[in-house]
Image (cartoon, rainbow, N blue to C red; front, top):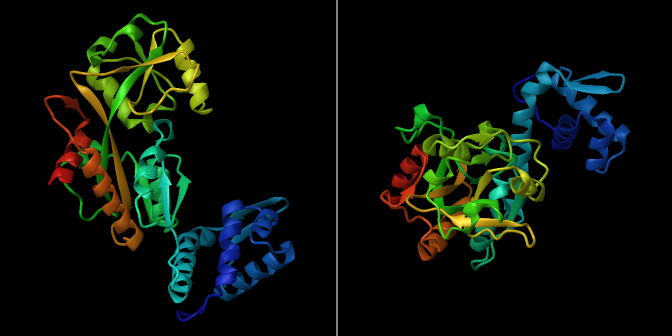
Length: 328
């Protein structure tokens, strides 16, 4: 294989589709090809590269070591090819935005930003969690992510210009305590977080994936109930209602489903705030991401989304640092 090898993007696309499904028939259907045509493209790519990309055995397909190394650059190559075609046609491709933190309904905030004129073509997709969205950003599969960004505790003191991901805090949202409507505390006009210490914080997933809820429980001395399989908000809220002395946290602006038999009680002294951030690759900030940042600043300024008073509100340490950056 020579350094000046010209790769056929159709062959590369066939490889990426097959690597994503590990199934030749499903990959062929995805690309609207026959399975024979797909196999020919991959064989020709392997011949050009001088190495096998897949191990084919019976009904199983696996990436070889060479195939695994080739996958990320191949995806980046397709992204660059799509961008080149869009530039030629003078029709920029849509901004690809992944969101996570679905229990807290991130699309409420994104929708307000996208409703601003002029129209901005954005394709919004679901992300499982921050690590999953970060991986998609680094692979060039997404342009930006929206959710709660948090660093490890040993990385809180530096802004990290050498980090591959950049992020900007765009909203701080108060959260309420949500508990069964027949619980004695549900009749209160407001609750202090310290009053929840006798209850148990119910998690919608494992604690490792729920940094905000974990930090809240640790700071206010609230015991946590481990999460179960995530079967959606309705199932989770049903567990909150039927689990003795259980509660969870939800954004204050998020309405509870009708007939849920749950109550949302504001938290005060202090009021916990959930931090939403826009995340992107530091070395690849698309014009559409710049426009998203401008829109978040416009709506956030009007709606006072970044208002934080340390004497009144509570944020985890990582979010306090991000709040100072946003204010500066």
